Image 1 (cartoon, helix red, strand yellow):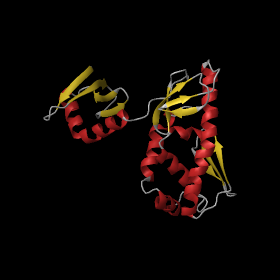
Image 2: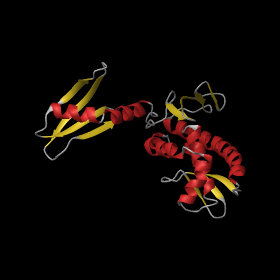
Image 3: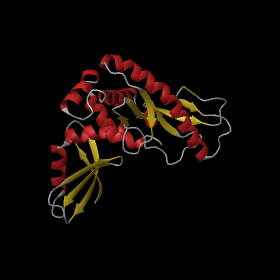
Image 4: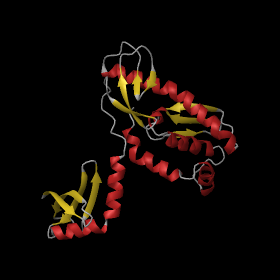
Length: 232
């Protein structure tokens, strides 16, 4: 049925997409980067859709706000001038440049980089080199507080995990996390350090995490929602 508008008493106007489905028996709501969509049964009316919106308006506003503040989707190719996330902030890639650094929300990669493949490779090299130092520093900050002693802080490129920990004390953190907000990185590091005490996800394990990161659930949810947007 296309785009419709619903006006509220306070003057707010909410745009939404309305579609019908002969298979549906109830009204469904979907929110993505294109906005709010309602899927209604074949015999339902626009008034039915508006009642559903009003009943769920707090949930709808919350999800729309989170999407508005979400990191942008990673570009398929990295080019000179592409935007990426760096420590949770938008950062523009510039190439070539005389040396690798991050200043004024600009990530300047090494010189003589022209093709998208070369820029991507340079971005990954820079991310990994920086991650080794940053992750080690943050682990050194948290380890004494948690009374643990990791053997090594390493990088990982695993496709399904942001981090891991072995019984021998090796902690691995994904280099792509350099693009995430610092608080999210700290959560992942603390999560893996906690495994040095509890090699499981039992209540005792989460209690160890919560001692250091009380709002860990917020950062875990961030990774679930926005982790796929990190370039790599």
